[in-house]
Image (spheres, rainbow, N blue to C red):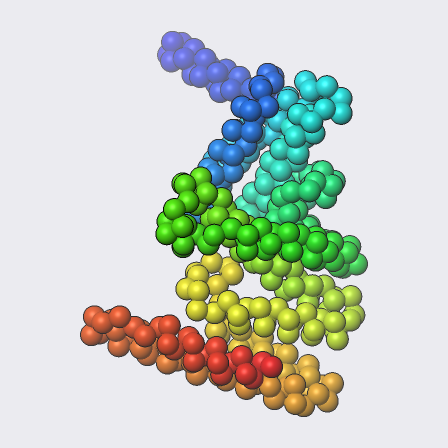
Length: 337
């Protein structure tokens, strides 16, 4: 009995040592700027891979916790490099930027796992460096969007509106540079035909992806701005941003995306009907009718697509999805104008 108790005590002691070790700040030695840059690039790729994993309901955040550990290690390494670099040096500034980027991504991680208390502190901490940086526009916009949502959840509506307006301004200043970069490159689809090397193809793909992510984030900014203006007692601005966001969503139809940025016909139609009610209350009857026409066109086209998809399943033939969605776009686009 004593031996069993002793083994149990040793196990408890070891467990306590491990738990205490995790809570302590580990000492991280600085590495070369080149190694840190490699670690940053690898962490970005691995973080993206982990976020794309769909976990079972029993462990919905398993991959996100793995991402959290990865980002913490990157943040600690960048912090060590920044502390070891000479004051005002380029390598020190770069290390501080990487630390801020990792911190912002950690904040997003905590927010996605519904730990909003920790998320806010991390996002706030990263914002000054991201705001001053001339890169990572998508990360800065995402951070501002998230802080705006968290402020709205605390009913700090003016602060929420200010943060979202900053996200809008960052998008407007970065959009031309990003889209110009994309236009200057051979499209990824034609990279092989143009005989570009593999590195060139990767650059083209990265630029196109950055532009797409930025536009997705801007659509979210518009959606949040519509709510923020409504919370601040500005219904006309709220309606304007709602309409602008819905037009952007309508242009994104037919992409087949299943994520939060994919076009959802029924949700879009409900929002159009709600917007019609606002225009009726303001006696803008033509605009109200246009919203209802757009909702009707989207729903009718969606029914045709669903019928075609069901028929294809039954007959094992491809569904004419593209044709149906093109027709949806023609009818709804004309109505929304």
